[in-house]
Image (cartoon, rainbow, N blue to C red):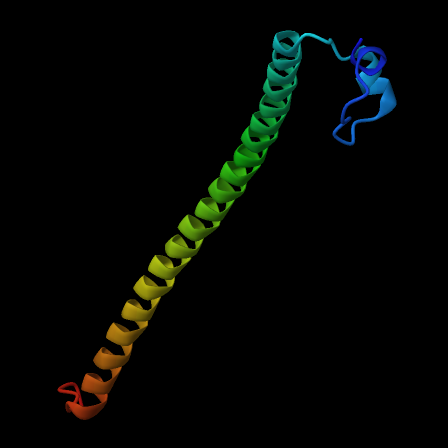
Length: 100
């Protein structure tokens, strides 16, 4: 293999790698392409997994936001009812009661 046939630079590769690396440059490029494909595939898989986790977390946050909006609507309706009751009570307090 390459280590046995070349006394040139080893590009800081471990001796074990140099021993199994083909001596033909085109075969070396083919090995490099395969290694690159494996590395890219692994990275893409990790990114897809991370994206899936982030989408799940986003959905959870959206659910929380929807629940909070629902609570706001409910509290706003309650506040409106109480405000109407208060206004009626104030009107009754100011207006003379005809039954007296």
